[in-house]
Length: 187
Length: 194
View (cartoon, rainbow over the protein chains, first blue to last red):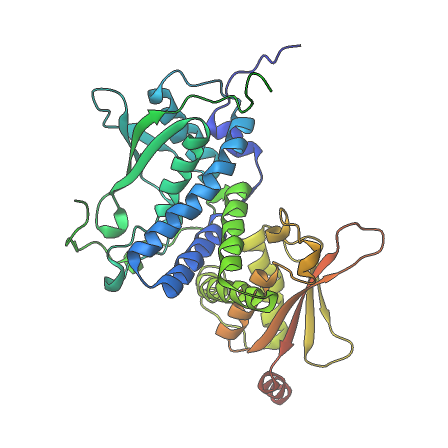
């Protein structure tokens, strides 16, 4: 018996998963960033650590994403970016993002977030102006895409905590790594 | 390059309207984040006591902020002055907002006057966590114990708060109890207030 349903929408999945109060999430994330700042002291180090933590999350998050969203293989990077923005962000963070700024090849785009639960109540002090507070998100996207054979580079182009009007992530596809069969032919 | 040397004026975060607290994220997003918190702290410490202390400190800062937020939003800026008042605030309001339900039970300790216990069948933070045998009695609920300590401390009821696993007959997973031991001054003040 084949499954008749196609990919589910972000709203439908979000409504069906268990949810917690966003404020617990926001405050826990703030506690993590504060701990990192105390331990590492250098803003650049904290940025790197947040990205690494995000990467660790992303490589596991992709499994849940694929299991719950029932998507089939994306045809091209454009579709991938749409999936991340419309389904991924919605089902985990409850917010929708939009995709803009495609370049000529279709390998580089921007994901724009108007609403970001990570930064409620947050203000960057003068001593931390170089901090990418939400850098965990860039790690998550990078980690998740790497597990589906896409090597990407994710950077922040706009950050509301630094005075811009939205959060914008630039996602650049570096290369598609073909999947390797782990066993040799003659073994 | 982005952000270099640009310290633009933006509206003060204190001027922004306070959210109603209805926004939600998925449980898995929170669980992933919490697991990273624990994993990061595991790399920074040598023993379990240190790990529990760090988780508790992280929880403490959450608790202090939760108190401020909830006092303003839920209780119209009135503050609790009595012991039972603050305990029921933690047991009902704080638990309801953070974990979506009131805590399973609130009990007074039988052996000591200054001990109270909040019990929960399964703490939200422990849902997807399994403790390896060699970590003994370690409990990630130390994070929640820290939240409670933060709330109590901020409200003027200093206490030592710890999280313990309590095995329950007939249940596979043990119950978690948050043990609150109030400081001397709190009990003296309570006695004075009558």
